[in-house]
Image (tube, one colour):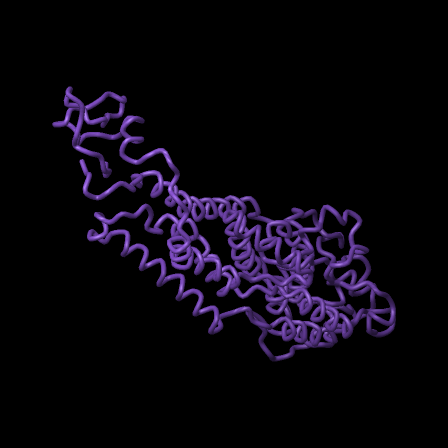
Length: 421
């Protein structure tokens, strides 16, 4: 124990120091003291509260806390509503575990969707993986009614839709000079705090804190910020709306005669973003899902998985049909394109055109022409939830828990350095 008391005791040789059980110790055993009597505390320290000193507060605030508060501005946001951005800030600061959980889910989902589609081969499948992974921060919806989704995947006229959407979504949220400056400021401030903590020359000074607990309390923020910068989420609500809407203006669908633009027939789209209240019946329950800040990815996890599975099923069926050299129109023989796409030959455009009924049949799996039953959310869902939860728990309590331990085992000091055990 490190503390400061007078060596003067009463005529019994007691100093006022106690052991773990509260028993008074003799002067010879004072080095084994772990506590003080209340009377000794009042005599040595007084009963008045320590006056607030602005100079000490401002210096410690600027050195220990301000760099971390500045780093919060580097977190990805994106909602058009400023109150939603403020709510995202409060959620990140108030719940580090939720921030880490959403980040871990985003990373795992990106890896999962890439592995899920890698077993199949069809034009635009790699673009589909990139698009679906990039839309994790949006309320993604996929329409399976009619021929909209089948036409989007099969028709060669829609190759441009995939190319344009990838291009319009390819805006970065990545490193900048301000980001590097904020991270550097935090790292340097934390290193100085750690060095200052273990500086033996400070042990005799009249101080009551060294900032290590504050640094550990906010340490979780650093990997979260750096992680989002590496992932570069597409969370700008205005850009997301614009990209998908522009792409949906050039999407085609099959008819009984020839492909036509979908906008000439209906307002429905195969892939769209449900930002509007009119898009959902349970609008209140899906509010968090529509906020594009990445910390809300926990709310989009299951709905996003369900929509991805719809797209995956169609790609899986048409990929198998290409493997068997089946054309959309049974009356057209298989044409060898000569070009490779992925792990196999790229199907010729003549093998990818047909009427609406032919495309619908072509995208239905199973021997009887029906799609076999599937899992609503796909495989490995609970393993990702468990792993993301474990990593989030470790990050929060590895930093916050360490801060609690540091403060708990830091002795309270404040008396004159001349009066020591």
